[in-house]
Amino acid sequence: MSETIQNQLVHRSVRRFDSQPISPEVFAQLKEATRRTATSCGVQMASIIQVSAPEKKRQISLVSKQDYIADAPQLWIFLTDLYRSYRIVEEKGENTANVRGMDGFLQGFTDAVLMAQNLVNAAESLGLGTCFLGSILNNPERMIEILQLPKLTFPALGVMFGYPGQQPQLKPRMPMELRMFEDSYNCFEGSYLEEFADYDQEMTTYYDTRANGKRSDTFTDSLTRIMLRDAPLRRGMLNAVRSQGFDLALQPR
Image (cartoon, rainbow, N blue to C red; front, side):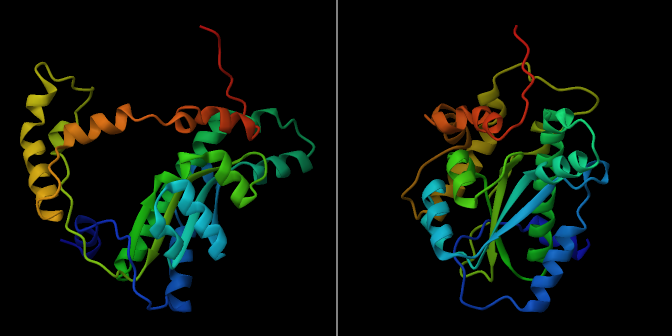
């Protein structure tokens, strides 16, 4: 097994870091690995904001409702970025209407997520700990304000990283036969709760061990709570996308 795959198989989210600084050499390697990420059509419609100001980190921690973000050694926010493309097309004297479409938005969003994963792979290969932050989208409009984003940009995903100050347990994942299918989607004939019974038990053991018996939970219970939680700003995320100048092109039903 390659060292790359070995690192990927022990990925875990690290939320506490020690005080060891990241050297300029390591930092340069991480930037270059991120820069070399695959990109749709080669047009590179994603950008990164490295958040260094303590006050901005604090404000983002409030959006995410995760106080440890304020102490992150490195915090990068990955963006869908069609502003750059818009300016180039505009200066070429062409019609910019198509630049605002959802095709470009989704290409940029995908590019941003791929860049984030490349950063995490590179960072973990160098002994750093990482944590993805989808929680930045708890309030996308507030994130846009904090980061002073222009129109035609949108926050996609955050990553914080540094040298780990903790060694969390490896969190179980559901078996691949429940999420990888051949040629067409597989809708299970029987009960989904029965299909997930073994994984539920595995997750119960994980939570019980991690919390020293103070948390009893299952995957299906946790999933249900997340799906039912009241998060109006997240439910209305397309409103924030539209406010940033993107054309949703929604057709009446």
